[in-house]
Length: 126
Image 1 (cartoon, helix red, strand yellow):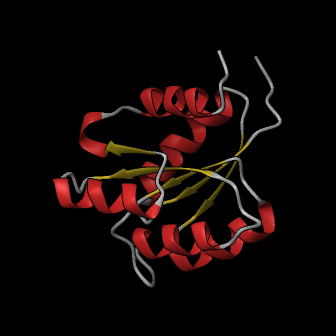
Image 2 (tube, rainbow, N blue to C red):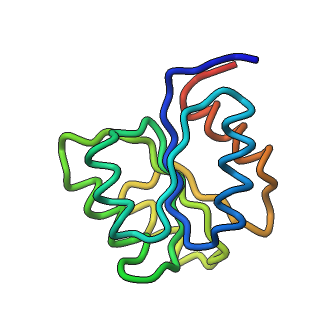
């Protein structure tokens, strides 16, 4: 098994889905941390400085757009941010892009394996 020094953070309030992504990423050799909401995710991101953040939009306390805005406004954080949400309307995609998201995946259209592939592509890993 390949062991990467890359950190991936999952900010997702669906614990079951978060665990599926976490397991698949760990099998692939990534260091993974999870946060159940945007507020905790923001605090953890500042401490852990992940290379990639998988970010849901609809969450309690602080939604994904607020988290995205806060991360992009924090000049010391340079994480790649991949939105993973069931919101798939053109206005959400446009808003995510305007706020600086690097990619946008619709949960219903992707498997955990596909999410791992997107992370690898974002990090330029073969």
